[in-house]
Length: 349
Image 1 (cartoon, rainbow, N blue to C red):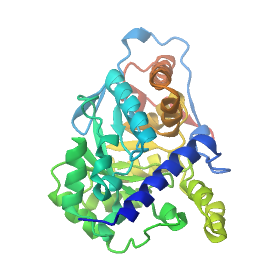
Image 2 (image 1 turned 90 degrees about the vertical axis):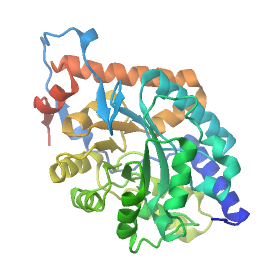
Image 3 (image 1 turned 135 degrees about the vertical axis):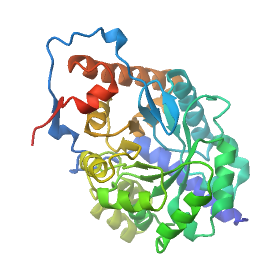
Image 4 (image 1 turned 60 degrees about the vertical axis):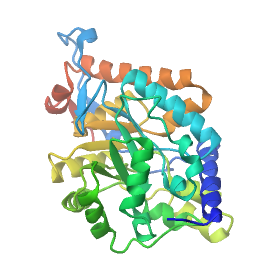
């Protein structure tokens, strides 16, 4: 598929704007929270454990993780994005974390930008996710384009991100979502790798998770509300008052992360489940795992760290791992299965 250069250059400008705004502006939800503050772990004063022997390992989509953490999808397509992706890939490889890249639509439009995403050589062993907007299936993207971005990344799975609100606020947004579920089903049937359905910070309900799974999606990333607001980001980018007003009006729209995890796990007890959206530390991550997620994802904290240096991103990974291990030690949980099934997380309100 050949697209005009103007389309590629617009996408590249948009990606640069996204990084700048995320790093420099207040893009958090104003009032809506992740809901994780409504839960508290029951402290165990005598864990009868050796903290150094706590087992954080898990398996997701057939690949082993040293700790159930995902560096969530963020960026690509610019020089700064390449630096950030390379630093994050190095960290993911060192600590055996999963990683997703930002939307790869731009490398279909401009293949010369593929190196800004190509992290596999730096991270040969990690669980790595390719990424494209599901709505692009209604805009001349199909199996060939999806396979191309998977091959370029040498990815283990493909994320189809679902972002209707962001597209509404985005000046250049694509808002024809009609008939997408059927196209997702056909794509899932043909692709040789698993497909992950992911929101971008407004949440996936249990009901929608069931529909996506019935269409053939292999995993869900609920990406709930409470963290970065893409409505605020796109509103900040907008030049006209209407789009800026839309961004402000819908800045707090979405389903809180905790609610998404609980409802999706109840609706789909066996689905491989990623929790992201507003997680700030390892305590938040541990709460989502105890609520039923298999992997916890963080995006903006890693973006901020990697924009500083690789060592800052590595330090963040170390701190997150230490925080999760401390939760497990102080609740008497020797492994992740015990964290999930021992009833150590209490709802406060």
